[in-house]
Length: 165
Image: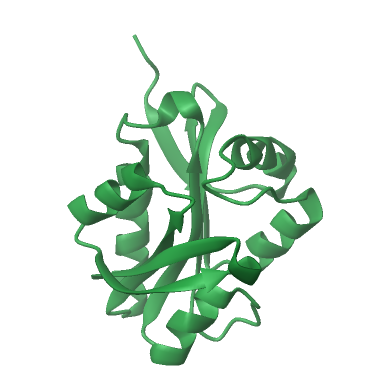
């Protein structure tokens, strides 16, 4: 029998293991040094880990408005609203994709957004390089595209998405 997935708060001691999961998902998410990942955790309103059998299989970092965070995508959402919870990244180990783990993490985000009185959950998904699986997944959760922007000096183009809470 496959152990159940547990969603829980991220512990700083597991950052190296989460960076390994993150970096294995490149180019869907950027390669991120441990120190930079720790800063992302510090900016996060919500930092969650999905684990199975005591081992991390994914994570999610979400930020509230008003953070001193230089991300071009976060700034896009901050400039248009003060009423959101922004998912900076969600990353699953390859074997966890398509098994409901992402949906479980998002359920926690929507619950947290409702609890803080936010009207929407926001995120971005790469369209260059393409990430059609993520775009399709977000569509099933009710996300709609608000626009697109080029980031990282033109290296990426992202679709900026929002879903009502």
